[in-house]
Each structure stands twice: as C-alpha cells, then as structure tokens.
Amino acid sequence: MKLQISLLLLSSLSLSNALLLPYEESDELKAESIDSTNAESFDNSESISDPEAEGIEIMATTPVPDWLQQFTGLSSWPDVNPPYIPLDFINFANIPKIPLRAPGTCPTNRLQCSFDCFKCVSYDDVYTCPRLSQTFDDGPSRFTKNLLKRLQSKSTFFTLGLNVVKNRDIYLDIKNRGHLLGSHTWSHKFLPSLTNEEIIAQFEWSIWAMNATGNHLPKWYRPPYGGIDDRVRSIARMFGMQAVVWDHDSFDWQMESKPPQRTKKQILNDISRWKEQGRGIILEHDVYRSTTDLAIEINKIIGPDQMTVAECVDGLNYVKEF
Image (tube, rainbow, N blue to C red):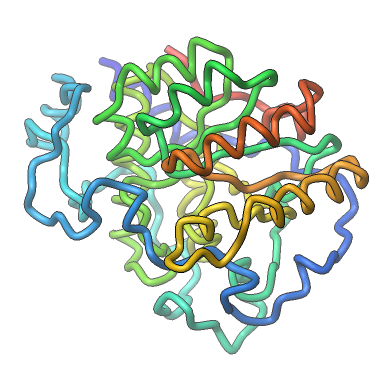
C-alpha cells in the first residue's frame, strides 16, 4: 500500500547535506523584529480561496485516494484547519518545548532561531543559492498557467495543499515541465502559533495532497511568512523535510495592497541590483495576476541560468517519487 510505503520511508530518513555557502548578513538580513519592511504580510487572504472557510468542503479535483481514506477515516479533504492524524514516527519527546507565539510577535530567546524575527538560519536551512534564482509561494493558482508557459528556467514552487487538490492539472503541469515542487503547508498558517499537533497536521495533509496528486513526497518546505523556529524545524525533520527561506524578498504581494506599498519599478530595481550580486534565492508569489506577470519580466531579466532549490545545494528533488 502506498501509504505504508510512505510512512516506513519517512520513519527512516536522513537529512541531506546542509548548504555550505558562507552566511553573509545583508541589509535584508539585519531585521531584529517584524515590521512592514522586512517580513511577509500576515494577511493570507489571497493564498487560498477563503482562509476562514472552516467547515466548508473543498472543491477538489484530486480525489482522496483509498489508502488515505482507510488511514484517516475521511472521504473528503479537510478545510483550513486540518485534523491531526497520529503518525508512529513522530516522537514528541524530541520536540523542543518552545512557547507558542502569535503572528507579529517575537521570542525573547534568540536561541530558538526564529527566521521571521531575527533572520536566524539553522544548519540545514537553505537560504541562498550560487545563482540568482526565483521561487514561488502559495499556488498553484489559475495565474500559474501563464507563468509556466513563459518561464525560461526551472524554478521551485512551494504549494499549499488546499490549492494542490483544487488545481490538480496545474500542479501536474508544473511537475511535467520539470520544475521542483515543495510544501508550503496545507493552509498557510503561521506555524509558531500552532500546537505541535496542529503543525503536524499542516505538514501531513500537505504531504498527502502532493502524494495523491503528484506521486511524490516533498523534500523541501517553506514556512508561511518565514515563520519558523527550532520547534517547527524539529517536526519537519521527522517528515524528512528541510526548510527553504530566502535572502532576497521581492515583496511583490505589496503591489496588491490598497493603496499599493510597492511598485513594479521598485521591485525591478531590486532585481537589477541582485543580478549584479549574482546569487541568492528570490521570494515571489504565483497567486496574483500582477505578481505572475512581474515574475515573467523578472525571469527575462535574470535569464535561464537559474537553479531549483535542490540544485542550489546539490540535494534530492524529493524524499520519494512513486
């Protein structure tokens, strides 16, 4: 059974080599706390159709497979608050006892290694790349289709489980075009604010969505809003996943703010500057027409000489492909 194979595999995983590039603190990495200039917005209203849609059945194009129905007892995909399903390879004793914190708040203890607050990266976090490369969050969406037709390079897409099961054909198009797919959790929650069980649920349902749709288990994940600490990392590692953050934030979503907090010209100026530096991971989004249109322009500026996250660190594409 596919699920049994998946669980046996996950319980015996080892991490791939961490990125060995030197960590250089740039202007973007000096932030001490969250504000509107150095972190993603905590408004996820465009990440999924309705982020408050608790209890509303997801209009999925990927059916819940028999093996998952047998394991979970559920015949439909969950809403934005997925249920926790116990897994035998999760060892709660190995999860650090770090207090929960709300979005926009920071821990007093820097040793918790918060990226969203202090830009702290752990030994196995991927945060930069030898070549300047684009990555995309929050899809797949209807706007992803045009982006895929125009990209000159292979990219990494960090997908929401909710959007994966709603947009099966687009997800498979990403895969079939040779791009890398990673997890962005099930429904874009700020992970440090969740209990251990809730974090597990965000990961497991995202993984199951990717497995049911694309026949693979993700190796790479990006925490929504960059919200990560050592508690989140320890849980993700039990699934065999490694965190991917960024050293160049395009803030492309700010073009959709009312009024806009950022212009296309400002973003393209940043891209030109980063291209001169010649390296790094750019955070972008593929859930708006404006950001995907801009991503196409950015792709033309940077050119085809880009890398997927796995290529950046000479790592695996996926934990397992079936």
